[in-house]
Amino acid sequence: MQEISVCVGSKNPSKIEATKRAFKRIFGERVRVYSIKVNSGVSVQPLSDEEMVKGAINRAKKAFNAFPVDFGIGLEGGVVKYSFGVFVKGWAAVYNGLRVSIASSVALPLPEYIWGLLISGKARELEEIMERLSGIRNIGDSIGAIGFLTQGKYDRIRAFEDAIICAMAPFLVPSIFKEEFFKQ
Image 1 (cartoon, rainbow, N blue to C red):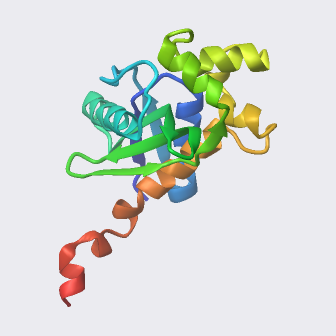
Image 2: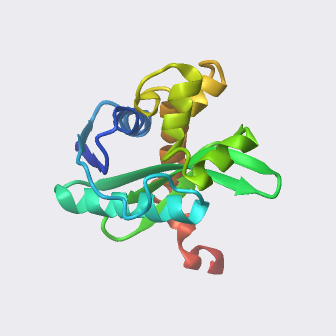
């Protein structure tokens, strides 16, 4: 069987591990994962789904173009405020040179004051706030806010792993993602 090669547009350990786990769940042990630091083209702390998606797609395309690989992966986390509350979540983008596919991670509620700290500039990014609240340095490189808020029952790696697997749907079952499928 042919090896599947993947490049993640980040040097963040949790994003690299999420990619390894997702692709090994899909393709088994025949996966090689590379990583490269890229500029997401969005703010340090994305504050909308649109910004996270844009950052994830930018990362996936830059990662794909950096190495001769089968897939480029972009992962972008952020904080969003909806009419019903403030949440931490992320988006995964998968790019194969022809098609981009995206999927979101789970979204966990955050206290409203965190949004205020971010938009007022009192905190530059969520990780800064979560480090103060949890006492865990570089929390975004490991469990993330999700791991802290769920007391380790779920974490950032698993959230991104699940999002990557869901974003792979058009590549795993390409026939149903063609409009012609419904014309039969």
